[in-house]
Each structure stands twice: as structure tokens, then as C-alpha cells.
Length: 231
Image (tube, rainbow, N blue to C red):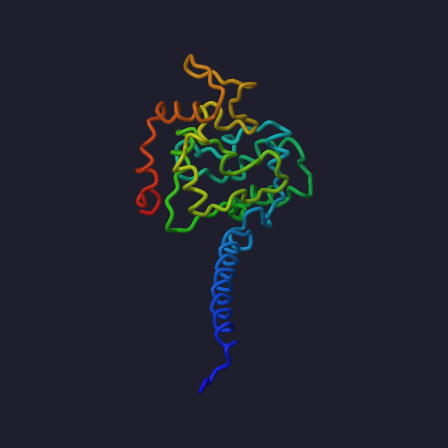
């Protein structure tokens, strides 16, 4: 005597396959959520005590990154400029602008402005700005087109897979040290060759490979080792 109808086998198979596809779909959705700005804050403009425009100061006025971020070449931390750096200019220009009253108040009181950190790595990640700068990693490689940002935002996800993309193949990204702070730097091409140490390079991989050797960059196995960033 047959207890279950023959269609039960079909329904069972469909249920199993359906469950597999649902689980896979949920897994994919969670992976995309993990990479989304909702989790990473990439592309999200955060409120600041003063509406400081990098676009105006960098592209408009031509101020070098190092004028404000003074420790970026020697320290693990790029540095937040003290109020007196702002007042070097703003004691002479825009002296009565309402927008800049928090800056003037900070200068008068000696109390630092409480800027909101834009690029924030977890506490378990070790990152050193000076190492990257001195190995030829450009500012906008990580921070994006800062000179086009009226308000600063986090350009990249800053997740481990993003870091490893460069650590596994640094030749794709390195540039000459004198171009690190050039926000309009262009990779070499047949139409735009780049001269370095008596050689002319017409593609980024050839240039990057030469720079890996020139800067004595550690092997890929070293810079992808867990202990390099997790100490």
C-alpha cells in the first residue's frame, strides 16, 4: 500500500533545491550588504564642526596635502591640523565670515575643534601612513579624488579585501615618490610615457615592477602576512 502520493518525490526534490537556492541567495545578499556603504560608510559625508572644502583648498588654492597633514611622511598618523594652521590664512582673509566662527572661537579659547573622523580602521588593524607614502602609494589611491570633494568622505570600503588587492599586486598602484601628492597624476601610457632613472615607461605594470625593486618593497608573501597588519 502506497502511503504518499507519487508527486511527493517531486515536491521533496523541489523543496531541497529551493532551500539550497534560498540559502545561497541569502548568503549573496549578506555579502553585498557587508560591502555596502550601510556597513562601510564609503561615500557617506559626515557632519563636521566646520564645512571645510578640500576641493576649494586643494584644487582651487593649490594647497599641498602636507601643509595641513604635517606628519604624514614621518608618522603612522597623517595628522589633524591644529586651529593655528587654519588661522595662518584666516587671520588675514575671511576674517569675519560667519562660517568660520567656530575656527576663530577655537583659536581664542585654545580648545580644539572636534572633527569627525572620516577614514577609520578597526582597532585590530595596524596602518602606517609614512610607510605607504615612502613606498610610492599616492594619496588619491586610497583617499580618492580629494581635490574634487566639497565635503570629505571615505572613498573606499577600507575592508581587508580592498587592502589585499594592492598588497597582492603593488605594481598596479605604485608611483614615483615625487608624484605621491599629485592629485592629478596619470599612469604612464604610450601617449604619456614616464621617465624614471633614465628609462621610459609606457605602462603601469612595467613602472610598478621597477618601483617595487627601487623601493625595496618586501615580497608579496611578507606584505600579505597576517602579522603585517594585525599585530
